[in-house]
Image 1 (cartoon, rainbow, N blue to C red):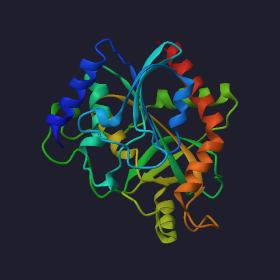
Image 2: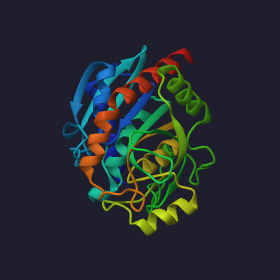
Image 3: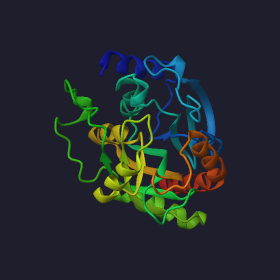
Image 4: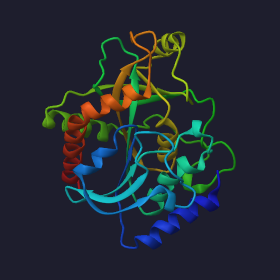
Length: 276
């Protein structure tokens, strides 16, 4: 991880937006970028302007950072993420968390598009992430240690904050949108899982599978941020689905689910505002 680039990115944002004091961060996964329309936007930047971050490399990721608010809660919204499978290393993946930490944020909400591994799931379901399984085979905290990530050996007993998970559940109830809860497993990608892999992951306790989120959750939890996660189940995983998997199905399903995604996050930000 390139700590000079991490610091350069944080200093760039501080210089560009000297009055920004985000208390919360939101990273929008594949197909989620339009959620930003539910927020009041003060200013925005292309990822390409931020040192070390670079343009988003996947369709469905807008590649913009928005300085925004909802219900009076100041928020940095990252419209899209960088992925490990892009071959860019950990630095671009860590930059959003590093910026949030340096600017004083206390909370990070992660979203993604995922394949449903639980038989009862259907495309369009929204799942609160209760826990995760890191199947990357690597860890973003490996290598030289920096105090920004807290202790050398971070506890992961409660990566996804129970209080935030309850607020998400309450937001779903108030928005009239059913939410499920489950375990998210991430592998590096960019290939989708084989049917045999999905069966193995189900035996491990995975309810949904994807290629992101876990590294950011590990970093944010280590840095002392409270973390919440929400998956849009865009397809059934291999061996469960009756059709071949494609990224087009992912983006199509998130488009169809967008009104409910917006409702839930709007209600969630109201919950955050009430909590102070």
